[in-house]
Length: 76
Image (cartoon, rainbow, N blue to C red; front, side, top):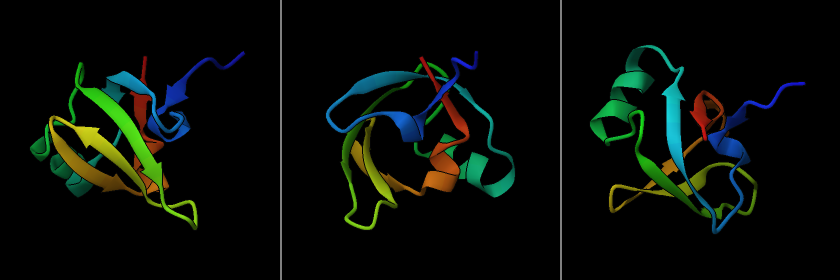
C-alpha cells in the first residue's frame, strides 16, 4: 500500500508539516525562497473554483501553488 501523502491531498482548513520536497530546478528554488523546506508548517486555505491552483499559508504568507507543483511535496 502507498501511504505517501502529498501537499495537493491536504484538505482545506487542515495543517501539516513538509517532510520532503521532490521538485527540481527553478520551482525547487522558488519553493525554497518562500520558505517551503523540510519541517515547514503549511495550512491549506482554499482551492480555486476550477480546482487549480490552491492557496496555502506558508510562514505567514499566502502562496498559490499549482497541483503539478504541490504534488511533488511530501507531507507528514
